[in-house]
Amino acid sequence: MLLVKLGGSVVTEKTHLRTPRPAAIRRLAGELASLREPLLIVHGAGSYGHILASRHRLSEGGSTPSRRLAAARVQADVRELDGLVVRALNRAGLAAVPIPPSAVLSLDDGRVSTMDLTPFLEFASMEFTPVTFGDVVRDVHRGFSVCSGDLLMLELARSFRPERAVFAADVDGLFTADPKRRRAARLLDTVGPKDLSQIEFSAASRTDVTGSIEGKVRRMFEIADHAGECLIVNGNVKNRVRDALRGRRVVGTRVVRGP
Ligand code: IPE
Image 1 (cartoon, protein in one colour):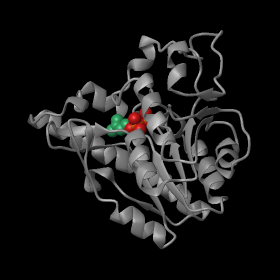
Image 2 (spheres, rainbow, N blue to C red):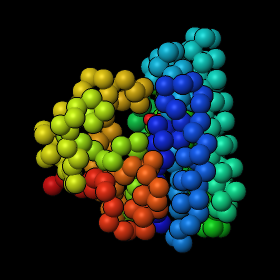
Image 3 (cartoon, rainbow, N blue to C red):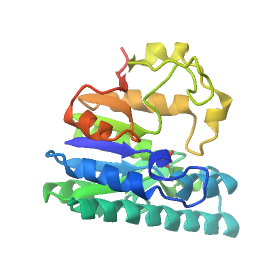
């Protein structure tokens, strides 16, 4: 089993509300369809999720009518993006089936409370390709909350123990600083918990409603614990995601579990 997350900044224009990147979605769908091994696909929400979720502070939950309405709108928006991804995958020849987290998962103060893995297991056993995504989900403590694709990667890695877990980002991997802001930033070939101290996590990269980059990297260490290997690669470079999933050596960062 192979596990892949298509980052929201690859499948959408992250700063333009509900703007997809259809060419990238189509190309990546083709790359994924060319693989021989069974796949589980997760994708981020990008501008279909983060913009409204942060404007309405959805990660805090709440029960006011306006928050509820915003949560429902974001759920509808991320399903729209998922529709684009699933259709592209189907067109490329994968029998992709959407599994919305809002229907199968509930959180407890941001941590997983329950997750029904049956649809993933059964569709996968029938040779469908399950597709899930960052979403607004129930939270027994907050009412509702934002669930990132990364959290889904962890839960799926825990249950399916994939041979490989690959994160497709809009940069080559993890750098010693934000490569979009610092020219001296250096790509890390491998990163483990002990390397965190050499990384400069800038405040600007902390805008996500699903947490800081440091938090995301820490989650990847957990994922690395349940996968044969865990990699971050550039999803904007043609065939890099495909080659990484095939186990070829590619430019990127290998995430290794801690001691
Ligand atoms: C975000 O999911 C979910 C919502 C904002 C609803 P992710 O955190 O996985 O999305 P990206 O990859 O950063 O866009």
